[in-house]
Image (cartoon, rainbow, N blue to C red; front, side, top):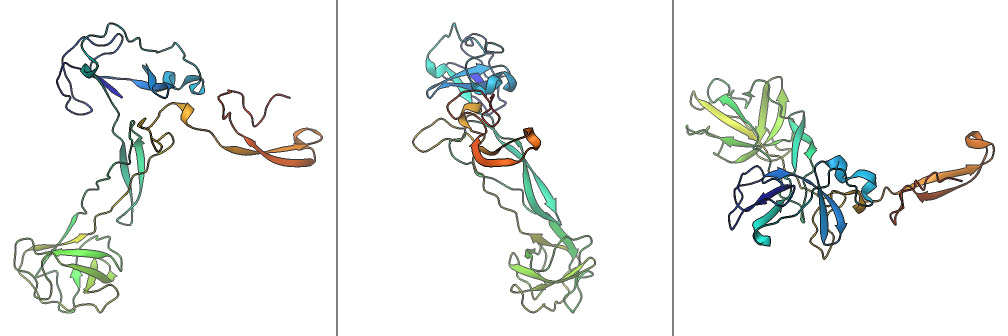
Length: 273
């Protein structure tokens, strides 16, 4: 998260700069810090993610711990702003196949809205690239049969059989060519040449919904996404007990906790005998 100090001012986003009251102890205005949970209403701040999550989130390590002292002004003069999440799209066959989370962000109480850039405009010459049988030539297009596309006359005269900004479906494709239908799976359309000017077929814009990961805010609280390790448990693993050491015959199998639920740091999957 980013720390700001200011008397009655406002910050200008995650990377903004401000001036104002004396910073709190070891904290620098516009500095990045990492939270470690102290209890349900308080946190510690550290200088790195590694220091903030050391020892599996148990206790209060001194390495990297920021001292908060000599605070001036009122509580409203000091602000912690969570980091904004970021992701990159992975494409496959001209479609968004998945998203890779590059920054998980912090302090989200509810899932944020995901905005995806619009699909590119696939330009074609409305005269020379349109055949009477409905074939439209668009070099290196990535459309497949069934894709929904929007027709845009691009400020010129529309092709007679097509309506500006209306949606059509790719009915048939070939190498650098495609055909349109008025409905999905319908009959491919015949077309009349339009003006000798570029017009567009625009693919549908992908949509995505964000979900909060481990440590997200639960019902009835306002903690946001907790970045320390205390908000998670690794789950359960199968433990095999037998004779003759690890290669011996199996006596029984049972599920045991892979890590402590109550805060004990010992590995419960393979405890000391």
